[in-house]
Length: 303
Image 1 (cartoon, one colour):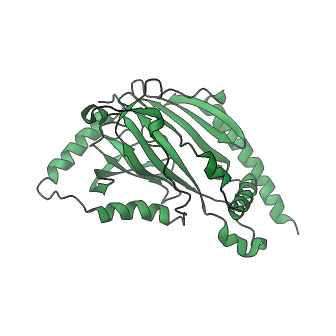
Image 2 (cartoon, rainbow, N blue to C red):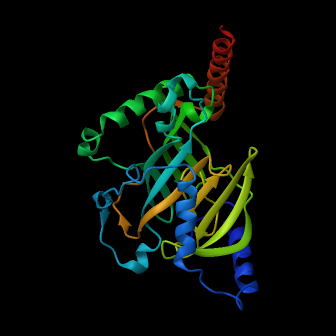
Image 3 (tube, one colour):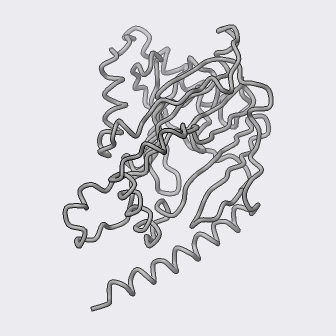
């Protein structure tokens, strides 16, 4: 089992909850699981055409299921709500601009480590984008460039979590620059609620936490006994399959789970981007967002 900080604590809590509810235990039907998945994404008015399946077998080889339960690849749908204001001068076009940045991510994992990367996009998909969608992308790009919101300016690209030494290496794009940051994994103060349901065929448990004033709601499954998840989330007694931050501002939802052995060497720390410390990166973000805030206020004061 992963040697993750607080893992034993959460495992004990989960075991206690299972014992407490054993007599009344019953699996929730798939309808509830579907509603969780669709509600979180549907609330952001996402288009199904954007959330497409990606081919996962490019990194995998066949492996017996019993051993594969602790390794594999999970396809996640990610949605980050935009914070920028859409100008009224755009008229009816305002209703066509997407309300969230939607993408697909792959989580490769085994007992000792995990790696979150963007899912590959088929070249023909890019070539077949409709002119209207390309136009909307142009609007979004321009609106994001002038937004003083961190989530509009920042994109998480890759996350490598080493569960053996408790470290993390991530790459983030901020205002057109790519940075690589390394340090200790965050230690979330998870609280297990005892709520459970079924999602993608797995029994999932609900856990909540508060980090830097952000409210986090996660659903994890002990049936995949690896303490990991998308983004920087982990530290629970099982794989996180769904997570929502600040009432759906950022949402990760698993779309497909493949429990197979990951090819040797596929899970490794990213090496791209300018290497900076956490404090250095936060200082850059703070400085640039302050500049954008001043520019935004100056534009509003113009007659």
